[in-house]
Picture 1 (cartoon, one colour):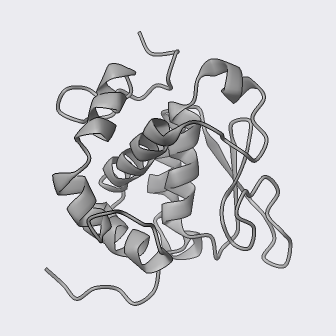
Picture 2 (picture 1 turned 60 degrees about the vertical axis):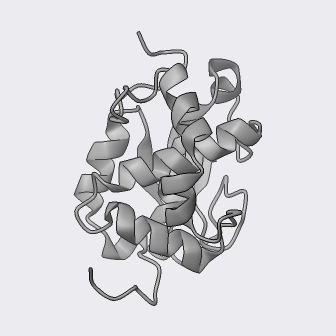
Length: 170
């Protein structure tokens, strides 16, 4: 394995086409905001991704982990919340864990990210897991998140995305 990255992968440095392809499967589209402007719909502010309806708003400096996390919220939320979505995705503790798990799975479909880079970026940003790292959580403490995703029809038994959002899945 290569050395741990010291900087978080951002939108401007990622394979934007691959990212759009992954998000298109779920009805999400990326809108780029000018670098000097605040990101509309951003819950965390600064460079973090914004979410308004099915639009992910990003700047060149938006971390890819943030984009995939907000995408995960859109995918995992119920239809009622999705219909009124403006900035705060809401959800409960179990859904938040499922979102974190899903963003790791989706990272595996991005050639310049992958799950190992996602683990590192989540740790660099400061995601907090009781086992100390995103990788340890994913491997040893995320059975509930995986089960939630399967039970809600977002991934199959092999943890592959079924490419639809919650309550729209067959």
